[in-house]
Image (cartoon, rainbow, N blue to C red; front, side):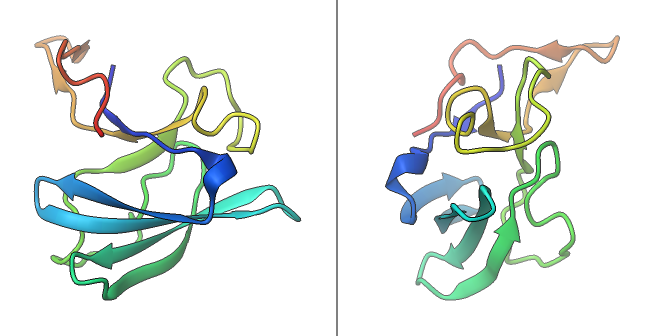
Length: 122
């Protein structure tokens, strides 16, 4: 299981501190109930805006359209590891869909090797 960033959609909008390998960042989670959609805002440790309103799309890494050295290097992917969900919604985010860090090691056959100690990052 990949490590993930735990979220509570019923507490959105919310800003949390998160330590990536590159250091501390602030993540702002937002929900639009009219469209049942989510966005994520990214700030540096000083609270300066880096990327605002990044759409949360199932299986699409956050900030993948940007190439900036000030962004976290670990890919953050909203996904359902069971591969059942077809989109991200208020009914599944934080339950079956998580913000996973795509940092698994792979064996020689390309299969992910689970890391027993990294099933949850807080």
